[in-house]
Image (cartoon, rainbow, N blue to C red):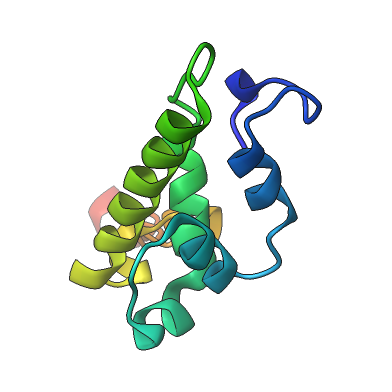
Length: 116
């Protein structure tokens, strides 16, 4: 998940488990985070993407398994909370939604009668 986590061979076990997880629900279960299935059903990819964005800034080097697990849990809780309080459209995690933020401005049109 995080580039600072190292290679799979020396990564904390929880990171290896998360890398093998096949669903958003697996992430919540592995980290012991309670969730509303309705929220996860609507925003599963957005939550995991946001979690990844938060994990990029984490440095797990020198941390024990328990500390890494707690940090991952806190990051997932934070990412999940983002989508409990607002929608995926509001959060705009993915490029397609970021690009949709501002509608294209209409091109300026100069009327011919102004050019006299």
